[in-house]
Every structure is written in structure tokens, then in C-alpha cells.
Amino acid sequence: MSRKCVKRCLLIGVVGLLLSACASSPKPVSQGAAPADLPRDYQQALQLMQEGRYADAIVPLEKLTRSYSDASGPYTNLGIAHANLGNSTAAIEALERAVKTNPANAVAQNQLGMLYREAGRFDDAQTAYKAALAADAGYPLAHRNLGILFDLYLQQPAQALPHYEAYAQAQAGEDQEINIWIAELKQRLGVR
Image 1 (cartoon, rainbow, N blue to C red):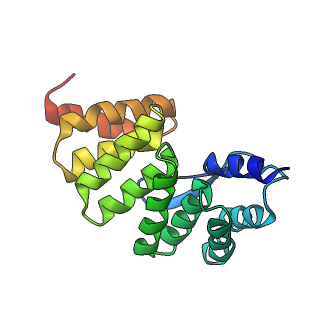
Image 2: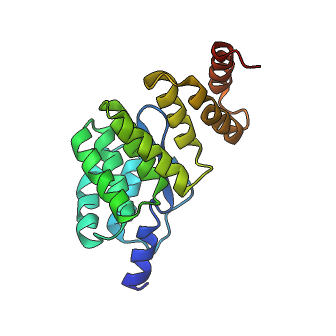
Image 3: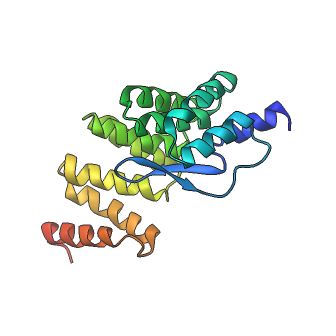
């Protein structure tokens, strides 16, 4: 595989193993095996992250960010690894680099939004979540997290409702908790 093709794969974002997150800590979600022609360090880092070995994944991810500085995927994964280790500053730095490299990286935008929210940077969180949705209008976790931001942090429940509903629709009944949130929010708003 040519270096150009490898770069393209790495630019896509999180290739083979899409690392996503709920409203709390980021967790890996398997989307199938990583293509065999990805750099060995990337395959190793993805495997380590899938196993929850975030500290061990940092060295190969840092090496990848140096080798593929124009690829957002390694920066995204590096940010997620740091976030899982509680290194918010390093996580934000890596994720900001990921979205600078590729503003359409919805996963990185969503992760960045969560870290901004945790840091009390609510305007920045809102911007990041909206950028995630601009990149992928159906990205369910960005809808969920934007709903949480509007509902619990910005005290704008009417703004939260459509995001909770979009998330619930995408989950097709798999997340029962969201239905409770929607019902409670509609009651507060006086909406049927």
C-alpha cells in the first residue's frame, strides 16, 4: 500500500475501530477489524485501546502523530486515550489538533465537546457538538451530548428536546433511559 493511500485511511478518522463515547467516559466500540494494511503501530494502538490499555497505546499513537501529522485519526485516538487516563489537558490538545486537521471528524468534535463541557467551557462544547452534527447530521452521540448540555448545563430544555428525540430515534429503543428523559422534559415544558 502506498504512503498516500495509508494517509487517506488515517485521514478518515478512526479507521476500523471507531472510538466513540457516551456522555461519560469515552469507550471503544468495535466496528470490525482494522484493515491489515494499516501501519503496524496503528493496529497495535487500536488493539491496546480496545483492550482498555490506554497508557500503553499512547506511545504508538504519538509516533503516528509524528509520522502522519496531517491525519486526524491518530490525534483522535490519542485524545481519547488521554481522556480515559484523566489527562484532560493532553486530551484537549490532541483533539483540537484532530479537528484542526479535519474539521469534519465528528468523533473528535464530540469528544472535544465532552471535555470542554467537563471544563465548564459550555460555549466551546456547544460549538464542538454542532460541528460534529454539521459533519454527520445523524451522529447520535453528538445529539445526546448536545441535549445534555442544553438541558442540564445551559438550562435550555426546549433546545434539548429535539436532540434527545433525534438520539432516541437513532437508538431505536435500545436506550430506555432516553425515553424517561424525554417524558420528563416534555412534562417540564408542558408538551404532549
